[in-house]
Amino acid sequence: MIVHSKRPDIERAALRLFVTRGVRGTTVRDIAADAGVAEGTLYRHWRSKRDLARALFRASAAALADDVRRAAEAETTASAKLVAAIGALFRAARDETLLYELLVLPPSRDTQDFMAHAESPAKVLAAIVAEGQRRHELGGIDPRLAAECIMGAVNRVAIYRRLGALPRRLAQYEQELVGALLAGLVPLRRRRATA
Image (spheres, rainbow, N blue to C red):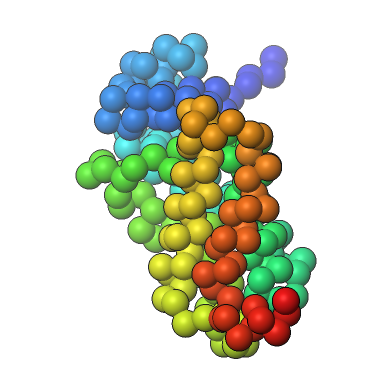
């Protein structure tokens, strides 16, 4: 007899509930009911709801960071790396909606430590900006600030698109946003030279 692990079912249920209700607003009972398992089944894999939430946050962030990194590695210039990285963020927002939404939930006292030592797309973006600055391709903004501005801009477009405030398809906003973000990062003298 083949026994199938319920872990993926539990993770999918928890992901849906954390996105719709928040971590604090979701109980172990809710997750178990949504996954079709007994409450005790969760404790075979995680010590607590908090451990499950932390694992989901970190795994989601690491997967998205890997996607962003792989997209950027295919390019040579900092600007091209950022275009590819932002494209990966847009694809995640469009194709992996729940995972992406989990990552853009506002941090709370319950979740603020989840990402402290985790790999994240923002760290990948900051490294791209720092490398571009070392190569004199990008301006002197703090790389972490630049990364958070990029993440924030993509997140807001994705959120407002989902809410219906932005009527076009998500991909149609990508090029406009990339242009605006790069305009803030590429030094003016370099923009004039390439225009």
